[in-house]
Length: 178
Image (cartoon, rainbow, N blue to C red; front, side, top):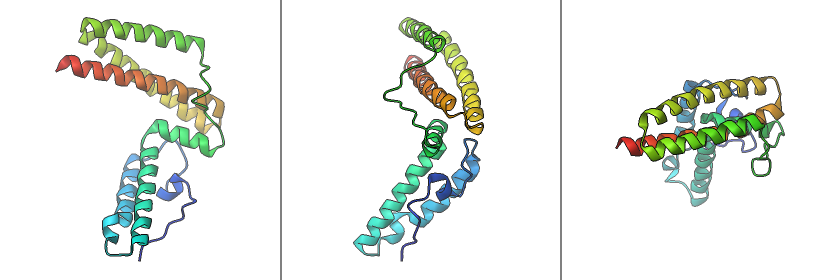
């Protein structure tokens, strides 16, 4: 017999974790392993096709919840969604002018360093951006804890830009260093 779960519960409830941006990563990992062990489709290979499908659904649900909770940006978006705040990523491109100007300048500088094969400069941009992102995540957590949903949504949109640029710099460094 397959174990039953409440499909209506949110990801935090599924994992038995408090609904907060600051999660205990070790507790999340431990709970994920426990849940995976319970719902892994291989455990139900001897059951009916319907029960196997149910096990697959549960495994997918656990994986989706885990991936959302593990990633701080996805977790923040999910918390905002649970609070009824739509970040409107597709339609809301409004950001502070200072932020946009700084992003444009940084992107141009990164492109120049990348074109010149200047790994030292790219590495410095990468370190600087990681520090900025760390500070932004702290501000995001503060905004979420204070219930400042509009501010948290703005920070989520900004962090998406910054995370993408960080990945691009990391990719450029990897190519140049090989």
